Image 1 (tube, rainbow, N blue to C red):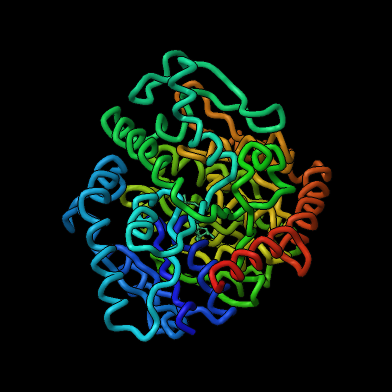
Image 2 (image 1 turned 60 degrees about the vertical axis):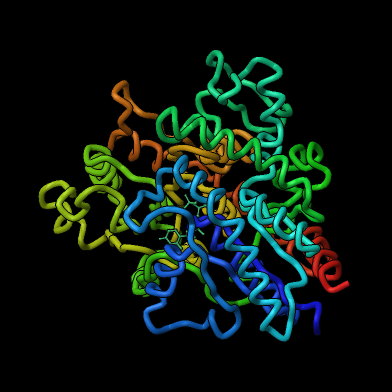
Length: 454
Ligand code: UDP
């Protein structure tokens, strides 16, 4: 069994940890021993959120290394985070592997690193260890990221990644349109952060080339054109806990599963599920408008109001809102989202279009209302609304605010047109097929596992 110990290292964000943890669980089912490397900061949050029910650490060893930032520094400042990572993590990872190999009965046979942690693949290469990159977002995003140098050469962005002019472009006719204002690095933070992230990604593109395998959480059917542009990238998705009849793991917040009982009491296909992932923050005015919009819809809703979704969330509600909606609305801090989306009461998903949320909605045949903010979310909206046609976008007014009326109108439009649900159900069938015995993702994962074992 000397060849069965895998070290998995995610980028330290919720949407990166959950799918890599899911991949790790799949490997555990195939007899692998897993060491999962968090940053000290995310490890503390994950362990805290277990709140007594911890079936992860029985199967996966969680360890942590520093991320190069002080405890008080803002980890949502992606520019600073990238600097910290490169300054500190490679050395710490190397030391960790040396320590494991010196003390554990099973040496590390393979490193699986998040596709944004290419430096970890370089560490593995230096130490003579097999290595794979796991890309947790759309294959299209990887194609785009790999073309950053072409964007510079073609005069679309300058050497710092700043767009030369505002323009739309396509990677392929059947892929979402991309606007230069919405490139993953142009839609985050200030210009310093944007440049730091751009440089980090450029460097990452080089380091990722040392990977023996490139796998991602998608399917050929969802993104045929993207995969034809990235032939070495192999889909193994959708990676969902429901595929192995289990719970998801690695959350930063404790899940409030009482909402599942609440969903049991709602009529079939009636509930608007509202969630913005782990990162997105709404300002107070937008938060209030969303609340008013949900009230206007006059339908049951389940709304994830993360403790940090807006500053002072509890007093950001419109006056009397909670009392007025108490008979048909439920707000929770963090939901068991994958289970919520598979619940028969859910009618649609008002989502920020993070890739995991996108895959989870698609896998459950749920139509979307799209409210993307930054990074890859805008491209994912393009897939949902324009390519797969299983959702509608919400449009802001001239002040940039999505109004309650707009939310109500789009919810009505989405739920009254049966074609959205019909297409979503077709997409669900097609997607599910990939992870079943003989499916393309299933076969890729099988080959990947055989390669690690070989
Ligand atoms: N999630 C969850 N409960 C919630 C909200 C989100 O479990 O109340 C999970 C969701 O199922 C997904 C992840 O958090 O797996 C969010 O990832 P995504 O890529 O959608 O968004 P990000 O957080 O990266 O912006």
